[in-house]
Structure formats: C-alpha cells, structure tokens
Length: 297
Image (cartoon, rainbow, N blue to C red; front, side, top):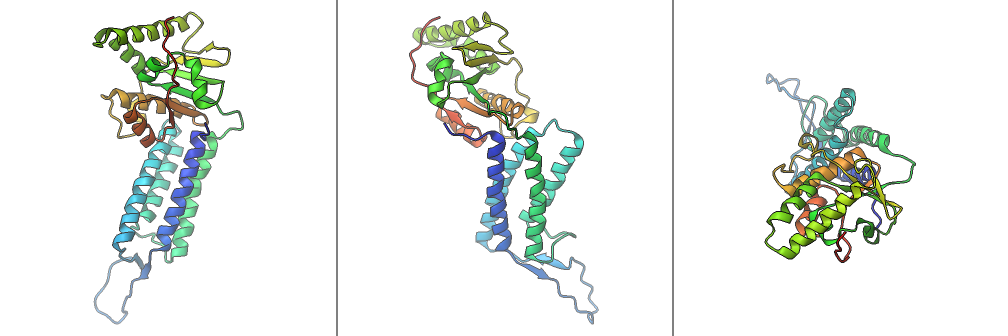
C-alpha cells in the first residue's frame, strides 16, 4: 500500500488547486473603467473590474470553488484547536483567495492578470507554510480503523498487515463500532451471525487482559491495538457528516484520529461500498479487510 500521509496529501491537493486557479486567472480579463473627465456624469466604481466570464469559465470556476471549499474544510479541521492568531490568519487568507477565485470586484482588485496571479501565489504560500508545522522526519505511523463489518469479517487484527503490506501498525477500535457489535449480538436475526459477533466481542475483551487498552496493547509482537471511549466532536469535523448516522460517526471519529495525528497515515478498513464512498469524499484512504476465517477466542 502506497498512501501518503494526510499532510502530504493536503499539500499535493493544494498544488493542484493552485495550478487550476492560475489557469482560471490566465483565461480571465481585467478591464479599466473609462472615466470621461469632461462628462457631467460621475461614475462611482473601482478603477478596474473583471470582465464577464463565458459559460465555460463559469462552469470551471464553480467546480474549482467546490474543490477548494472541500480542501479548506480539511485545513480548518486540523487547525481547529490552534491559537486564535493562527485561525484569524487562516480566515483572512481564505477570504483573499476566494475573492480571486470568485473574481469579486472590490477596492483591492488588481490592475493586471499578472498582478492577480502574484497576489494569489503570495496568499496560497501562507497555507503551504502552515502545513509545514505538521511535517515530521520521523517514521510515518500507519493507523488502521476498522468498521463493524470489517471486524466481523476479519476479527484477527494482526492479519490486516496482508492488506496494507506492512507488519507494524496500530489498530484503533471506535466506540460506535463497539456499540454496534453489542447491538448485533442481541438483535440480529441470524443465530450464526450473532455467534460470530459474540466471538469478536470475546476477542476484544481478551485484549483488555493484556494491558491498558486505551494506551495500547501489543498483539503478534508488532501490532498495537487501542480503544477510544470518546465520541467524535461534530463541531470539529466535516459539515456534511450526520451525527445520527453510524457510518458518518465512524468517518468523523476516524477523521478525529487523523486530526490528532496529521503526519500519520490513517486508513479506514471497510468492505462496505457506501462507507468506502463516504471515506473517499472525506479524503480518507480505505482498504478492505483480508479474507480470514472467524475463530472463537
């Protein structure tokens, strides 16, 4: 598995956005407002203004705004608890960048396209600099977050190495997953399936006997397993996630793990196609659990 750390992916995505904004500006036109000094009519307005875009440019602009807005939500997420001065810098930079993408006519409108490009590059550099805060030269940690179905299909988390191509990694078990397992062992209509779920729960309970599960216990010598008890804080996550939807709760909690470890590679483990679709939208890499038989413990 070759997946870049979250911070690296954000930087790569920002590079793509930067290039597309430069192309948008290059295809745009700035005009100087003509003022007749001999006219008795006083024209109130800025010296320069953006010319009207054609339909193709408007479509490209809309797509670019959506892409940038999605990217910016992730930036805000990882800087949510940062000092107010940093958050203000982020808000101010975002405002200036959106002004250029939307080509708003305001008092600070540039006089040339080259000037517009220069201002944009100057502003986008602030985001690049902020991302450097989270870059580290240390070895990148891989953190796997299985959903409920993944644990039922492959309860031996030490077997997940086959899916990621690496022996050492950390597995994080979420409270929503534990809650779903407890519910399934009682309410699922299939007795055989309830037995599988009970086997998974016994295995997880067995991990508690090996040490502090919240700090992490070691299985198979190189795999660390942790459980977290705190539910995700939806004020700090992506706006489109629904706290009433368990799949969205798992996505939000996984993003929270990623927010705490922005230099690491956090991967959702799921074979649910809808969950995979949501993970992709949330900028989360995912893998499918390995095909391993369920065994009792």
